[in-house]
Length: 466
Image 1: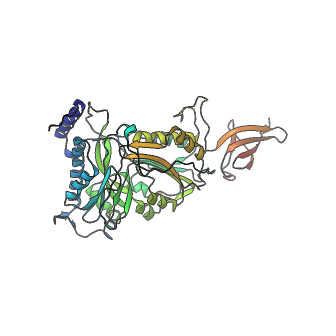
Image 2: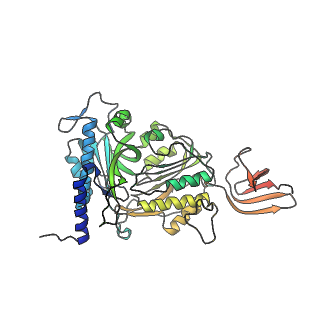
Image 3: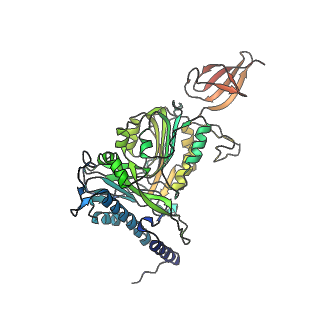
């Protein structure tokens, strides 16, 4: 029986075949969507060997597993993922079966829907995200991982540190809001880290930050000892030279290799509304990386991992163990446009809007003052902007733990009154704990007032004489 495809689908497949004939295999296009993974896998053991092997590890067919043969294997996988893309609806099981057929891998499987992993014969992990085009969100199946809705307890404190990292690891196939967020943070008094890209070297230096934000990919692999490991993609592309540079981190599982969508394809399909993009293989960090380089965060700090499956308990706990107060992450694969919207709205409202700077979601009454995290999370939920829908399931943006003292990114003035008798200016709002002499200030028309009292919800300062 012959299968009859809709004209739009026939045109799309014809286009992809033409692209495939005109471009190298490694440059075949993949559709933009959230990253993810699913299903089950075979038991295994720890990532890598205790240290770098003095000789190339054997592959499944007895050949040497050199950096060059490893790179070639990953290019073949990326090309096959494009072939799956052209074929249409491909299951995780088909992807896993292909990975298991390759002699360079000792095992393969899938932890979450839409993604797969393979383990090289030396135990090192390779994660593959199936960034296929997004379906109609109304037709997405529900996720068994999504938590029940709830409210967050209100913390009342500002980050003690004014140092912030706002990173992006994604290429031109995505339009995340990092540039806007960087501008907003600077205008509200935060000091940005000098490095702007989420490279391996930059991520080694995380320490003492008040705010950490990143747009990236996230997905799972499984080790030889059957541990499910979540990994977060970096801006560094895999290469034989970098493999040599990072051989110890790859061997101990601090780094893994991760293939996902990155840049736009040079040719876009006129018969498809979805953006065509190119897969790349980058290094990705695991919780072992956080532990190895001893990330630290300042008191009342905030971490926002804007990528798929970023509410992973193991990675979050590694951050909490090193001082992170609150971490925001997604419980499932994240739809990019919905993830960017949630981040913009969260920072827009948490920082307080400044005319001509951050007013991404204006209200009828004009720019809004800063609000606390409980109010913003509640507003996200009322708008349903804490949710994401992909073909791999529905997820939520969650914030934890509920007992954190973090609650503000900027002081917030609710109203002001003057006491003519005592010559005091009294500010009511949300201000956090007293930052102390030399740091606290109240400024009116460019002049600093003498602050005589600073409480969480009330500040008193002397009125300047006429």
